[in-house]
Image (cartoon, rainbow, N blue to C red; front, side, top):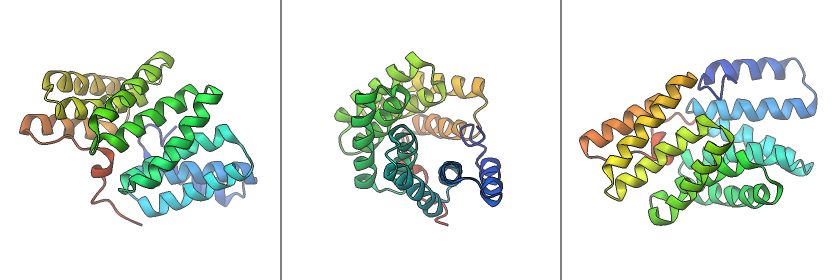
Length: 216
């Protein structure tokens, strides 16, 4: 919960405590995965990705497909933030295949959003259908935090297409959702997106957000 709301440090602390207490292997893998995502959100990309890679491999080895896909999208996000498009895309494509076959709607929505992020810089026309589908899925199931994240990405795509009015509308809607949910970290991305629109610069994608992040 803390990591999802953007309170990464608190989430990392709780996961560390669980691991010190000697959790069972399944619980330890889950704690390591959540800690890894917390580290990624805190900018500790190398350490966070290492945690998630270990956990995701463990779930994949046991053929726990739902749990694997749930954390594989976090790992893909970590790779995107580190600028590793190829590694991210391989994971996203695998998650999309699995989620479409099994009906894991929220995971399909998040993976579709991340595919849009993956394609946005080089192929924005291909990226937008993925983000639009992600938003439709996430809105339908009430996954509002992920929906708002997708809105910021689509705002960047609309900006690139010259549709500044829609881009501003999407940024405003995302900000309102994050405010209602009490999300800690995402409002900064919204503020940066609004500032980019005001200055006529590009709204940052995930892979550019953390270019100055710590690598520890």
